Length: 426
Image (tube, rainbow, N blue to C red):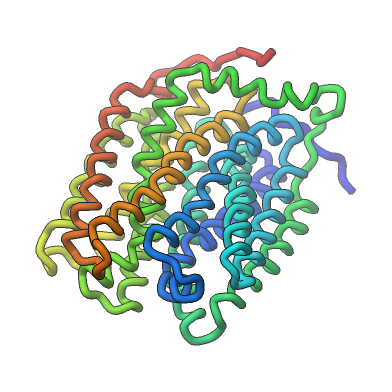
């Protein structure tokens, strides 16, 4: 085995071994997003199999976000303490087991599976950003973060328009989850073998288990960290809850689309992220400023979401609206760069872990609330367009609040030449 590289000391260089590991972790991120969004095309099958209401199904699927948020903290801490070689493959294996449990067909197994999926998936984006920060020069960080999200949202789109024809013509939904678990487990082994060791992750430098969470004292005592998390979390909700859980149902029951058409139209949102996340990250890097790109894109999100919900049918091409909304939604990744830049370099993993915790705690809370609101609106009847329009108004309000929060974020782009923080956790 070749000598293991240490953590890069210079932030202006490329490190190919870490970039290769980042690519594998991006594949992990692709798979976890595909499995996160796949239940959205199985709503009738899952409702029938488990005899669940809208609130019950939304709550079950939303279990993913509870462990995803909580384990984001653990993921960040373990990456900073142990490095990527052991932490990331463990997360992939946890996702694999969770997928297999979901495919067993019982409510109890599905609940346990969804919790494990969220726990394992927490290591995907946190791990990918950790590896990107060690493999790419600092001047390309926002671009690398955006490219990482590109992989994820490509998986989100695939979890809709690829999975739907599979489970409605080729294999059962249970067999899909069992096969996904097997494929993911293979990725765990490959990632373990390919990820480089980090020479300074020795037993002597790790400290105690309690000390592994010490970096969060720095991250969570910084008010800017909370602004980043809340801003990004509110910008994520229209996708994580609005599109990936209820998008297909809204297009079918609210807008009268057929199932196949509804799946393809819903998939346009994550597909738009595929282009928007790296593009807006590149623009932010190129300008050397984060806030203008974030604020302008969030305003565009607000306008497009209102147009999709309230304009008469046929006003906007059906596939274009969702795609453009996804493109500008990619700006939600910019606060991930900001939180790393407003905190010391020594807490890279923990900063991203704290960010994911804040972002997806909002999704964990919003998922059952969304199901409850829709259930109350319907009153036992089938959901209709007015139900979804009034429900969607809450999402518009969340985007508006995110715009206000973005105004108070610190500008950290290269154009302001912010000094690199040197604080070392106790």
